[in-house]
Image (cartoon, rainbow, N blue to C red; front, side):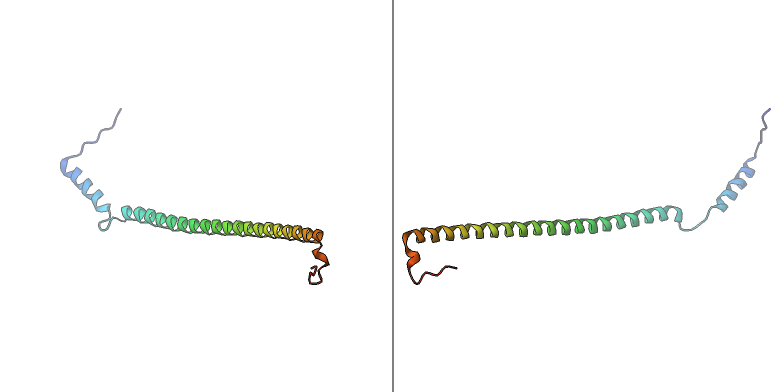
Length: 108
């Protein structure tokens, strides 16, 4: 057996007006707060990503600078070795020609 309730039109209007009276009248904070929180979160994520990108770029530039400095040191040592070999070669050629007997020739 189903219970049935019949409401008249004035009774239904009073129930609806009571429900409307329970709703807060004023600024709709329920819709504003989620929008504000999501925009604040997006702002924080954007700032965090900019800091992360800047830090990653800084680390990459330091790494490249160190690699370039190492390459320059390697080039300098190779050039020094080449010059030392060239000087040794010329000194030995001059020694074979008898220039080593020259009094002004000084070995270092």
